[in-house]
Amino acid sequence: MTIQEMADQVLADRKQAWAKDDPRVAIVSTQSLGPDDERAVRRVVAAAGYVGAEQDEMVRQVSTRVVGRVAALADHLPADGGD
Picture 1 (cartoon, rainbow, N blue to C red):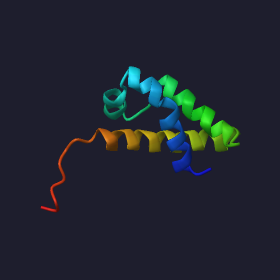
Picture 2: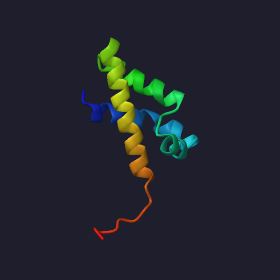
Picture 3: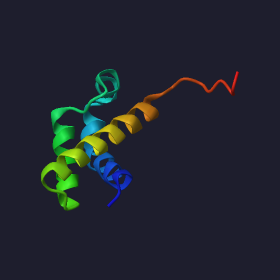
Picture 4: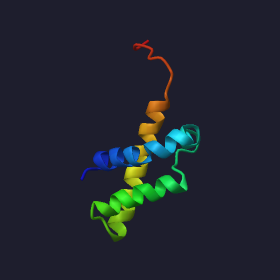
């Protein structure tokens, strides 16, 4: 499973919880996930078969990817078109 696939899985798993309590502002402003989101990342990474130091590194990479995706989806600024 790739980092992107694991990040997609985390986003899908957290979608329902995030619908009730939108964490985008907190995630974007702190550039980190909340405790429940971190647990979801750890579950997905562990399910993909990573353990030990490799698991810790994958959790970091997947968390970074999820934060980036949340920030990108929260970006409401218009594109400048290459001014």
